[in-house]
Image (cartoon, rainbow, N blue to C red):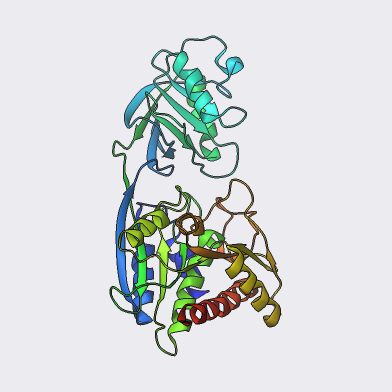
Length: 373
């Protein structure tokens, strides 16, 4: 819980490539090292980032924004024009020559909103969230001008600017690649990892990320400490991943590195969203999942073998796709993730302990499996 408090309250949002992620990486590195591991920070770059920061300026007000993946980089300025949902009714046949279109999120795909205002000759598009906080998204194609999203709290300012015909501007990054990093802890430098335990340390924008995935990161750190208490285990490694929220880029980068070295692990144990709930959802390959469920029964921990809901993903999938047997522990409770409401006070220490205890027992069991001739 102390790890979790530091990640969520001392550091806060940990968006890939931002200062918060760098602070988290430094903290995680130091905690692994304090437990006796040889630690590497493995940097990588990725494209298609949904969380690149952008800026909107309206009068004397500067508004934080996120660049939609596919947006053109650079600056666009023009008179603000409110277009509702950016559908036919919102545009109403008007020309938006050189204007910055102000649209509400909802109903249409982001790509359709973009195409509609582009057809009316807009110079840029700002989409206002219809829910609390910031949001990210993708246009699924390269855009010809900047397209950004802003929080619901920007609505009054931007709609007032449109009502008066005031000028607004958008500034988006021109660098396509976003930097991030994984943190890898091994018993000694260069050791092969037979069992790899991990979880992602990054968050989406504007959230403390307590459940998603400060809870998983903190549990990985505590497992590393607890399993090192009687000496480091041969073949047992730990990792935290960057850029999970942008598309599993960190775990994919580590898989590629280990595959190139001919050193993929036999098992991967993933921890993601483990802080709210009354039981353990166990997901993954049949053999380690069955072993984990049996262990849960012996420990009196309520657990259920299940699958992720559609449109959800996590880092075990990168390893599974490479042929590694995986087991993923989660609480399966997702009500506040990806929002400012994902805060420390809602984390249930008893649930974190249940999942940590089952993960500990499972890791010990998997180490016994790989030790067999």
